[in-house]
Amino acid sequence: MRLDKFLKVSRLIKRRTMAKEVSDQGRILVNGVAGKASTNVKVGDELTIRFGQRRVTAKIERIQETTKKEEAADMYTIVKDERLSESE
Image 1 (cartoon, rainbow, N blue to C red):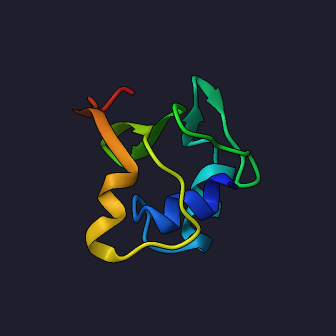
Image 2 (cartoon, rainbow, N blue to C red):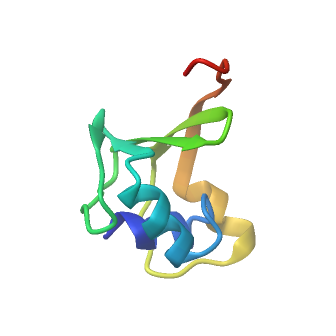
Image 3 (cartoon, helix red, strand yellow):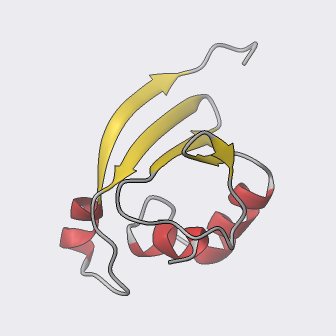
């Protein structure tokens, strides 16, 4: 599944256009490598997403084409959620 679609379906990022922008800005790493919106992701991949002053690392547990809002969080596990200092 494409990275931008996974981020939208899993609701890590609410809109696919926003997911595309964030990934194309280099703010998402897939297994430690910068990921583009079209990067294919699979179960077991680790995503590191930079949201302003936060860095969230999530491991992909499941991939589904569609999901209900209540079940979206089951698609990933948060490994780390850290605040960044001003210099990072």
